[in-house]
Length: 512
Ligand SMILES: *[C@@H]1O[C@H](CO)[C@@H](O)[C@H](O)[C@H]1NC(C)=O
Ligand SMILES: *[C@@H]1O[C@H](CO)[C@@H](O)[C@H](O)[C@H]1NC(C)=O
Ligand SMILES: *[C@@H]1O[C@H](CO)[C@@H](O)[C@H](O)[C@H]1NC(C)=O
Image (cartoon, rainbow, N blue to C red; front, top):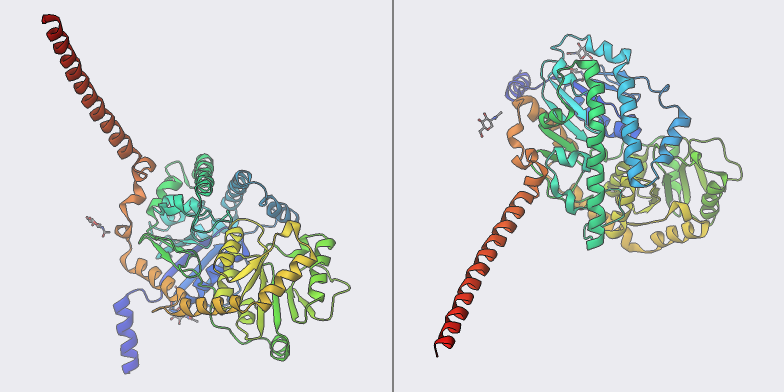
């Protein structure tokens, strides 16, 4: 009875028990999906009912979790995917264009989907809040369709220059772009390059926003707001950033750092994997290049490089690889299509994690204190690899010039030098030393937005300022001009006096 009362009290007090949440994560990226499902899990635990629209298959099963899966195969088959991924290794400017072109195609495709039509046929009072992956904007008008519900944004891609501007995160102008291999203490020329990356990102976004607005208006009607005004309406942004795991940034109050929501204590390992880990005399090396960069995309020569390097190691290697069966695999390598990564990294016998340095993998390695050997390919992987080296948490190698010898030497160095492990363990303890976990923080702020609806007053005013105001360009021009005028006037006066003095002297000279 008392328990029931307490539950009732709690329900009335926080007033958001069992909310109906619409979750839209429309970027077809398995890693974004894993990150979002960590938040879904936290919300389910608090009794909420979640409807998610996206391209990925759900992993979590619950009566309170409905997934509307948008079809994608016709737009992005395996071949197109491999092509898209390799295009991401081109120069920065073309990558930006490539990504936006894809985003526009994706928008057209999704807005035509019968799955979206099905969602829009739900009663318009079905949802209390929209949680939205801000990387692709085309389903933001759903918040209007379902009765102007509040929006909480997410950024699994962390502090992203594309969102930095719309969320008042202007530190980006002096902070390394995640696609650059720089730490947070850049030299002058590095800052110049970094600033150009920032401007390119904004310029390309601006260029494509017009097209995107038209595509969106075609579906939702001519008077649909622009992407920019939707972005301004998003009260909070849950960002995959953490001051311990990443380089610290000054984060404004409208951005909630929830980096590492996916990293958590291990669940029980499958028996066979547990036995391998428990019984390994020399320890285990875990090797996975994440969901996008599987080595099955690469040539047999590349794979041989890895096999040769691994054959020189005493350790057991657990290798996540989705391609066809390989022949001539040394005995110490165990290849599977899938491993429970987070749970494996938590095992005490794991010595090293060989990773592509995606944000999720890097955060999980840090959470469990496992040093890394990074093989970054593109985007934030580049900066994450640099981060690991700068903080003394691991080393990285260049995939394009990689030889078996370099790979072996790098792995061996991280194995032999205890510094990497010690630094990792220290960082892991520091990350956990918090009043709440990243996931608890994410769920708290979503419920906060549910309770208060309009949280726009949390935002710094700088978020809505124009670039020239926020960068003080107008003030600098004003001060510069004022100074010029003052100096000019002073100079004129002094020459006038000087002239007069000379004139007087001249007159005196003449008189004598
Ligand atoms: C589903 O949500 C309802 C309320 O929305 C709650 O009472 C129920 O316990 C939830 N079920 C599960 C399995 O979480
Ligand atoms: C949960 O959401 C689904 C829509 O996806 C809806 O059909 C169902 O009635 C909701 N459940 C509750 C308990 O509100
Ligand atoms: C935000 O603050 C202004 C005053 O600064 C106030 O008028 C407005 O009602 C507040 N809005 C909300 C939603 O709290």
